[in-house]
Length: 270
Ligand code: 13P
Ligand code: ZN
Image (cartoon, rainbow, N blue to C red; front, top):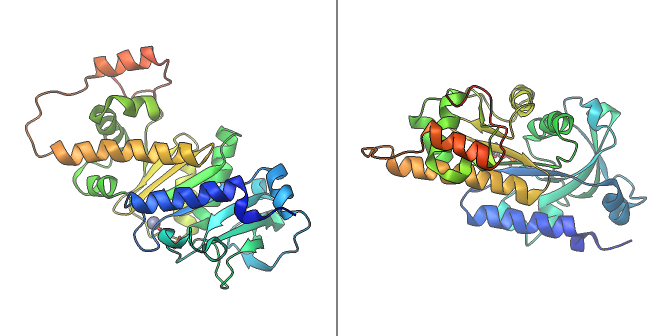
């Protein structure tokens, strides 16, 4: 069997967690990622692997039964993933309708998947229905998006429109807008289900005073989505207290809609 630490998906996961830490999005153990592995790639590196342990998930997700995920560990620091991937990451296969995760590799110090596993798995199930190409769910704590949730109206339309107005690329990258949850305790099935419900129609979900979830076909796409929203929030936090002389008007945003043939969220532009 091939060496799993050299698998392209592992290399990319290590690069991404390292990069996210460098961006300041993942202080201490902040943030978590799950990556749905393709059947062929998981077979190539894990064929015949006997489960090391069984971990109860506390929820069911029948749509994900048999699916294999590379996922970050709870309490683990993104900055350390590159030095000890087999401790900070794990590969699990969901079984028994999602109620049990069989550990196939990793969490070598006896650890387990992120405490946000419900939000990740429920979001995967929701996104796979919307787009079967979706393989990544990413959560982190970018400072400007977080700061924005203290000073901006949390209405989804208002929040989305402000981000769209902050740089020309925002509406191009997330024409579907952002979802915003009310504040809720994290690490629960309830916040997981609420996040997944939003994920049926958007690819970015803000957790006020906490962080953000982004999804995508691959790690780059999920990262780029969050990166663009965070850039919008950074501009907002730089200008919100200053007199506004210019902005992107709805007329400008309609021009972008036309230019890039965007499917802009209905009712968000006037
Ligand atoms: P974990 O260490 O369990 O992944 O939790 C980090 C986090 O960001 C919680 O929302
Ligand atoms: Zn978090």
